[in-house]
Length: 140
Image 1 (cartoon, rainbow, N blue to C red):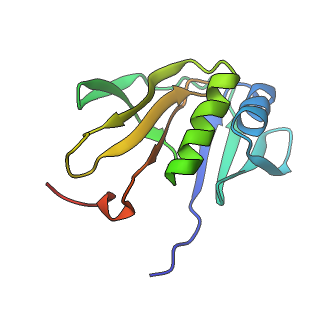
Image 2: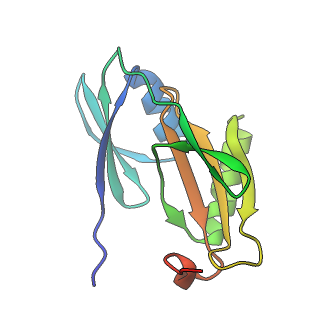
C-alpha cells in the first residue's frame, strides 16, 4: 500500500512562537499561511497550526515503560540517523524534554528510540525511530 502524507491541524495560542518553534527549532519548511494559521512540512507531512489565543493543551499522561507519556501527542517515525540529528538539534536549541531522548523496550519487541517535548502552546510531540522498521507494528 502506498504511503501518503498525513494532515494534522491543531490549535496554538501564539502564531509567532509556533513559526519559530516549527520553522527554526524543528526545521520545518513553511507553506501557505494567513493571520490565523500556518502550514508546515513535517518530514513530508502537512501540519497546520491554527491560532486560538484561548487554546489550552491537555495534560493527561499514561504510564509506558516506566515513563509518564503525555496524551494526546503526535510526531513522526524517523530513521535512526534522522532521530539522532533531531535530538541533537533540539538540544542545541535548549529544548526542555518531557522525556529525554532514550531507548524504550530495550531488547524487547518494539525497541525504539524516543523523545517527547512540548511546543510553545503545550502541544506534546513524540519522535521515534526503530533499528528495524518491521518492529513498528510488531506484537509481543
